[in-house]
Amino acid sequence: MRFAFISDIHANLEALEAVLEDIGSRNIDEIICLGDIVGYGANPNECCELVKTKCPVTLLGNHDAAAVDQLSTQHFNIHAKIAIEWTSQNLKHESESFLETLPFKATKPSLTLVHATPYEPNMWYYITSLEEAAFNYQFFDTQLCLVGHTHIPIIIVLDKEKELYVHQDSVIHLDDVKDARLLINVGSVGQPRDRNPKSCYGIFDSDAGEFSYHRVEYNIEKTQAKMKKIKMPEFLISRLADGR
Ligand code: ZN
Image (tube, rainbow, N blue to C red; front, side):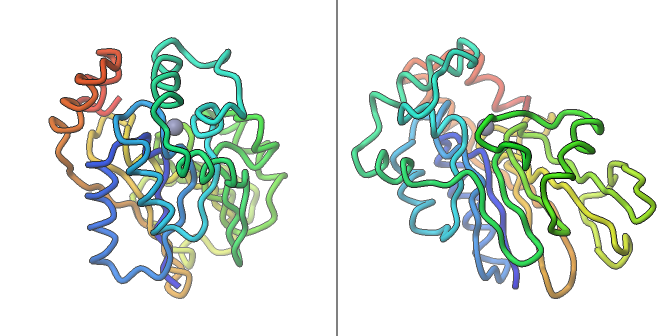
């Protein structure tokens, strides 16, 4: 099976369309969405519709939960709050009912899937250090765990000697890290924050035992113009071009 993983789309339709087109050319059996379909961008309904059609497994993200009143925005920064307010007011009924049905977690053979962390995925914790990653390995039992949430692509390896390290390449072959377990952040489609403005997504080929990142260019100016029109905070608009 060849899986594609998309996450943190954040209502950026141009990015989502570009990524889906790229995925379409890569012989993928199933697309899985790890959440945060809405929040920040100008096309939440279009993104919900596309994800609903394309991704048989889709998880709930914290921005999705906030947009349908399942999560308070008290811990969101001011920009995210403004974006969620606009999103809630502009979500169609179909989008709301779609987001309301999404689960926190899913599993596939050898894969655990969550938006935030395997430890209590409904608490929206972040994995931003090796210590936090090490802690989280206790809370999944599959070989791979795929997450989103930080918008930073990273592959963290726990090898058979129980050594924990960051894999420094955009491709990893399971044969090369025998008996290791991997915690992989698939990066963000709609708001990358690793100083590379191109959309990021991942592919896992379970037969070849290979995970790889893919970066896709999209029309950032068009996305920014739409955000300007709906008066999103300038910071949210400019960060897209910087990938931060
Ligand atoms: Zn996000």
